[in-house]
Length: 219
Image (cartoon, rainbow, N blue to C red; front, side):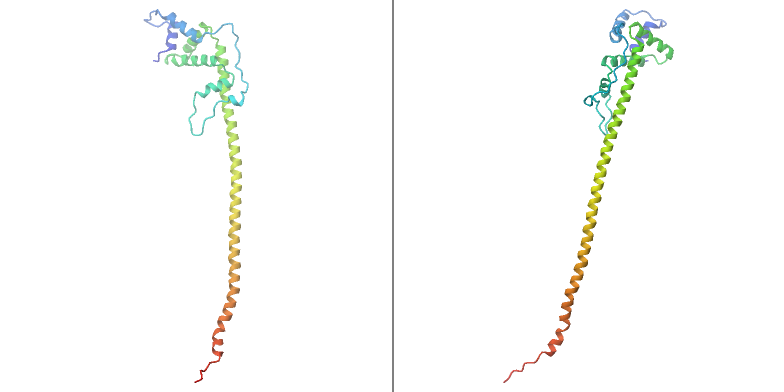
């Protein structure tokens, strides 16, 4: 069984068989009181949930990285959940985690409720802090989704521009290929014209040689 705050509290509020009072029970109670106690006269207030400036935003998880749980501290502070309220909520969660597993939910609820009441911690205050924390986390996810949409929109716009550039490059390639084909066609035609002249004179070279007069040397 886990040992911790829950076992100490269980000893204070539940009489166990063969259990004897411990001399340090008061010291343990004082220690927990210092952790959980708050001014009884302080009213329960809902945490402020104003939208924090962009500069106070919690860090965004880098692509491919695991989320760092320490970022939640910035999330709660940005949403107006005070550090001391969050610490108190964390201690209550630790208390719940340390309770005996074999205890029923009613016994666990009685232990936690009695301990909080004994130390002047309002359950309503804990509930308000919990609701504020959930709202902060919902806002964190919503902010992340908003920033993700912005990134995707910018990426899609960039892709569209790159696609247009690619299409333009392909068009220029096609124009160049067509120009080369036209160049080849025109060159072939011009070569044929030039070859006509050569063939014309080449076909008459033999007849010109036969018709030429023979020169006779006189003795």
